[in-house]
Length: 167
Image (cartoon, rainbow, N blue to C red; front, side, top):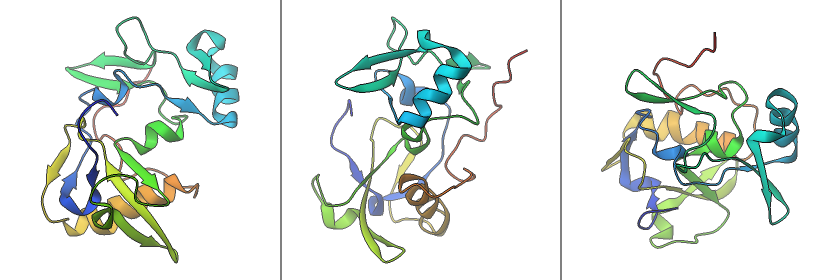
C-alpha cells in the first residue's frame, strides 16, 4: 500500500473500477505458483521478476505493470481472463484478523467464518459512506469469494470499460 491507512469496508458506500490505472502503478504483484506457470507459458519469462522466494509481474521503468496499456484515456489490463488473484482483488485486502485501525468496522462473516475486509485508499473508485445494498450484497461477497479461492467469475468487481483485445 502506498497511501494512508486502509479503509474498513463498512465505511465505503460504493466502489467501481474507473480504469484510472492506480492499481498497476508502483505495486509488486505477487503470483501464486499456478499463475506464474500460466503467465510464463503464455508470455514468456521476460514479464516476470523474482525476489524473496516469490514470482511477481514485472513493472516497466516507470513503475507501471507491463500488462497495463492506455486505451481511450483509460488504463486497460491486457491479462483479462488470466488476471492474477492479487489483481482481481485490488483495491480490497482480506485478512483473517484485524491488522489495521478500526478492525471491528472491517469484520464480515462469510460461510460461517469471520474475515476482515479493507480497501486501499489509492483507488479512485471508492465512495465513502454507509454501504449501499449493491456494495454489501454483491461486491463484498464476490470479492470475499475470490479472496478465499472460490471459482468466481468477476461481475461486480471489475471495470465495465472497453477491454483490451490485441489485434
